Image (cartoon, rainbow, N blue to C red):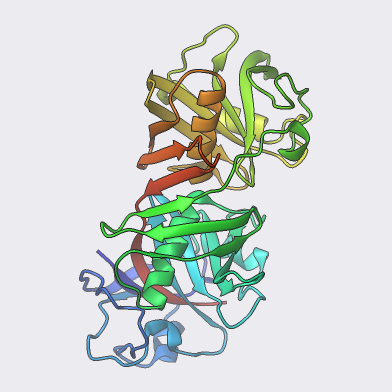
Length: 357
């Protein structure tokens, strides 16, 4: 289900629903057609404590996102396995339409739209089709995001009215990423080659296997954890257990307590994402993640990729695995022929709306 929502960001009160009608999102809702809005936009935005949810008119010629209003951000909310993002059409500029401080307010789940981050679709550089930038919910900017890039791809397919299997090139802070929209609606992403050299991840943990950090000891809160460090363009610390217990039961972890201690550990000069992993078989894993700058999330695509790379390095699994995350499964394939990691999973539009900034 998808809907349109308009409300204000600045009013510090719970929003009351004034009217609700919802419908399934039309396949071309972002193609360049007008959005028939019930009433004047400025009048609706002036209703500080009201929220309207509405279905788009099918007889439009300009898209909802084509509407221009000073000080108003039009956006689409997407989610990939519960990892949710505010998607912004920024194709006319390399300057993000909102600041990191505004992104923090937008991502607030009580007083804003609510999201794990804000993603901007920007013009391509270095001969790529598009560029992608992200602000986390704390205002920091990560190099890239695996679930976010799947949402990015689906957003592009609607903006450009693409059909069938399509792929394009995306410039990110982690380098070139190539997502492919498949016929079943899922998105397969070539995430590139994992980075294993300790100084490039970066981590201050001493390398112990051909320049990599594999099953190294890391003391956190008095416990010695066995960790493997991987970068998928952003840093990850993967653990299957402690020195005392080699078989994690990830649902038993108090992630809000332990996660920040990994993220801000002195061994990670750029902070780190942390994946806690439970092994079911040589092709089936379960993970929970504490994301740098976002905290506990329902899914992390780069994290799932890092988990499979770490599992292979530690001799625990094959190269092709299903990784269960709180929001659902991802298919990860670390191919031996090209050393690239491929991630396949869903991404869906949740709703679209307008908000003053």
